[in-house]
Length: 394
Picture 1 (cartoon, one colour):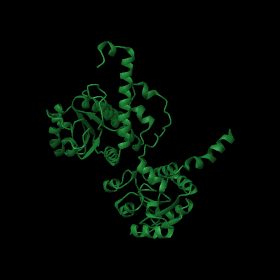
Picture 2 (cartoon, helix red, strand yellow):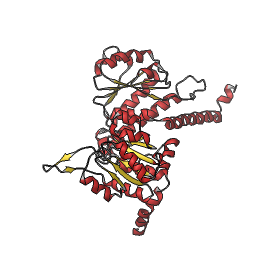
Picture 3 (tube, helix red, strand yellow):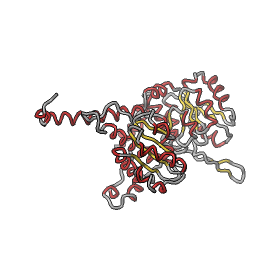
Picture 4 (cartoon, one colour):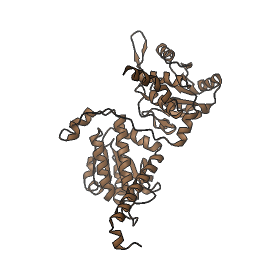
């Protein structure tokens, strides 16, 4: 065991500090690789919350929870922190039907937090638990559980919450950032919520999307795709239906989706549409974006999918299907890559291999097209002509 004198040496101190930071970084990297469907579901729940996000937790988890609540509130999601002890002594009245309770406990066995679950549920609140143990009482009792399990605390004694609190804090930031992005929260809105600080006075900067952190299994699925099949309403559009007095149906498409579809086709991935409705405007959109296979009025989408497979000569594993409702589930369950938009029903989200960040009609199709091109190493080639034109102009 190192002597006290050796421990006090600057070199030893720096070595321990670096090891602490590197261990925390390793745990966050591991957490990032484990993120799966429950995280996307949590983002969707918070995004569509009719009330507020009420954050609670004891001890260090409570301190982390306070920061998470503050970050959510400052980025457009009404949220506040309340101590479990205060909840049990009257502050339960702060919680209403439609609220989401974000409960933090590394062990998942905090008595003060567990005691509040029954009254919170009676009030109609949904419970999202963040714990370090999948089989803990809090994890099992919650409506949704997000795991922040760590392999090792950075504390040399293995006792003080260090890596675990860092992981929980990072997960809270990830939740807030994803909800912010889904909400299309702008720099101007951020400034309005920070009128007294330097942050609000900063010049807005263009939003840069973070690099995709996709698991290897999803990357493998993306690489195999040779045909992207799209639903229309809720995927290529926002799902709204506008009917004129003459019975004519009007739809709004996203321009960036159209370019993305053309680029994807140019990269070697074919396009298809299977939709339950019939519309002349959809047919024109299909023709203008290079869709090779077009099935409309397809009430039985699985039958249309099988017909498409036979016509294309591809296997189901080489096909991706992008839907937004339960009628899309049959082909989604049989294709190689099931895709869904974030406001799809929970059952659809649960069976999707990937849920887009953008909503239907707001760039979701473009997002998928870019993911496919990036996974298949064709993205740079498709972008090169635009970059060449820009260089020539300069």
